[in-house]
Length: 420
Image (cartoon, rainbow, N blue to C red):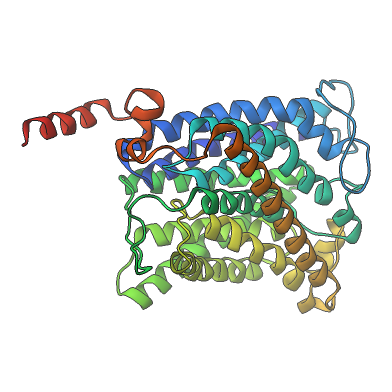
């Protein structure tokens, strides 16, 4: 049953890619929708092969405190761990997490990155960035694991790592055409379909139960249900808090902000879902929903163009989620899951300090490594970004020769030709 549950959970996490397709496509313009959908599927394929060849080995292979050095070209169908989980099932589950981190990273490329840049970055990020962070925290040999870092399902490993890669990409690619004015003020570039965006968030929300509850690795004690409860409470609280704050500040109940609040709540609870009481999950979600709103405004003021708000939702909320474990972890749950109690439960500043160190170290590494990789790709390709003409045309036609919405786009072209 443990193997069945983990396989189902892995399928749920893989299905989150569908949520990302709808979220990213809905949050951007129609002329790029087919490109966004296609590159997601293609790069998940790349991530799968790279993770099979070297990624899993770099995480869980025998090695040192920095990197694993065995289990390459994974093909184990005989071994079982203490819970009876087979090596192949664990591999499949871990692979889906690596693919999610990569998809988050690609938020920084949206509507302006060359397809060739996606391909090369997918290979190198899946081989050299994500596995090293995951080894530090989730491998028994990792140096942050030795310090006692608590990240149950990946607020740092998956979300912060992907967001820091997205930050490196969006800095190097620079903002989309027309996003900012010369005086520094921002222009909104609205997504073409809020229904797609909302459906994408719902799919991600459902898939998150594979992400968090699946990370329990088993069904015998039913603890996955408790983790699911905390996950649900934080997501709901994040959505409500974000809607409240955007209405309080702007007087409008902005739908995209509310949706990002739900995702921020999910990201924030990912590290702590197995360590905290339900009331704390609500607080963690509320704070996640509030900070995502202010984070979005902050990046706008900094002239950082983040089309799908990956930096706020996955980065800032990922930092909060990781640190929150150092505040709210209960002694009983921490002991059950191999950790230490948080500050509010008499644990002092020890665990909180470890959580802060892990955020700083992993965030810095993911950003610097991704930045260096992208500089190298830029040199090889002669640039990371499509031409101005191609960006105006849209990546559907310039990169793929067809439109995601062929009928609608052809009607627009015909109207322009006739002057209608």
